Amino acid sequence: MMEFSRRNVLRSAGVAAVGAALAGWASGCSTVPAGGSPQSPAGKLLDTAKSQGFLRVAIANEPPYTQVGTDGTVSGCEPDVLRAVCQRMGIKDIQGVVTPYASMIPGLDANRWDVIAAGLFMKQSRCGQVDYSEPVIVSTESFGTPKGNPKGITSVASITADPSLRIAVLPGGFEEGILKTAKVPDAQQVKVADGRSGIEAIKANRADAFLLPTLSLRALAKDDAGFDVSEALKDAPRTGSGAAFRKSDASFHDAYNKELTAFKQTNDFSDILKKWGFDPSVVQGVTTQELCQTAG
Image (cartoon, rainbow, N blue to C red):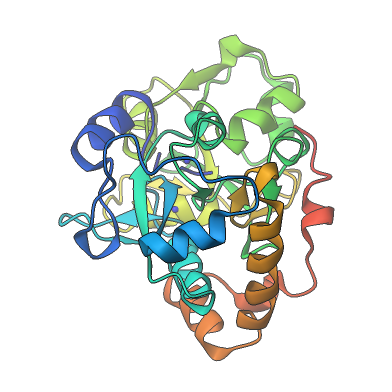
C-alpha cells in the first residue's frame, strides 16, 4: 500500500538500505525491539497492544500511502488512519517497520509485526492469506514515461500489443500482479527496487514505462520534472487497501473494523485522506468483499 517502494519509495536493494537504517523506527521516533514482542495467544492481540502501548506495523516508504521522515517518524495516509483507529481502541501508538511488499505477509505470519498498513492493495491471493479491514483508500494506476511518452503507452493493452516494450515494476507489488494477469512475459518486466529506481530506469532507457499508483507517481514528480505521468489507466483493475491482519487475530480484526467504520464518518478521517491527496468520497460504499474479487 505514493510497497516508492502498492506501491510499497522502497523495495529490494533500495528497501534493504532503507530498512537497515530505519527498520524498527516508529512514529514519534520510538523503535521496535529486535524480534518484536512475543506472540500473543490467538484473540489476545488487543490486550497485548493495550498493555505494551503500541501495535507493530509493517510499512513501506511510499508517499502518500506511507512515509518515513528523516527522524524516523512514521506517517502517510494508511499509518495515520491506523494510529487514529488504534487510539480509539485504547492503543496509544503504532511502531513502524520498513519492509519490502513481498515480505509483508510472510513477516506478518512470522509475527514480526501485528498488522500491515502500507498500501498493500487487495486482490484474491492476498485476501486468501490475511483479513483486510474495510477499505481506507481506493486507488488508480498510471504509467510514468519519458517526457512526451514517445512510445504512446496509455494502457495495459498497449503492453500486450507490443512485445518490445519494457515495463518497470516493483517486485511483489500490485502492479506486478497486473502484468502477470495480463500475461505480460517476464522478459518485458524490469524489476526495480523502489520508486526512484523506477524513474531512473525510464530516464536511462532501461524501461519504456513505470507502472505504479497514480498518486505515487505524482508524488515522485513533485521532485523530478524529468518524466510524465499518464492519466489513470482505464483497463487496470480498481483496487484499494486497508489494514491487513493475521486470520488468527479475527477478534482484533472485528474490533478494528467496528472503530474504523465509526471513524470513517468523522471529519478527522476526511482530513487525513485530503492531507495526503486522496478523495474521501471515492471510498464511500466500496467494500473489502468487492476489492478482494480483483484477480491476482
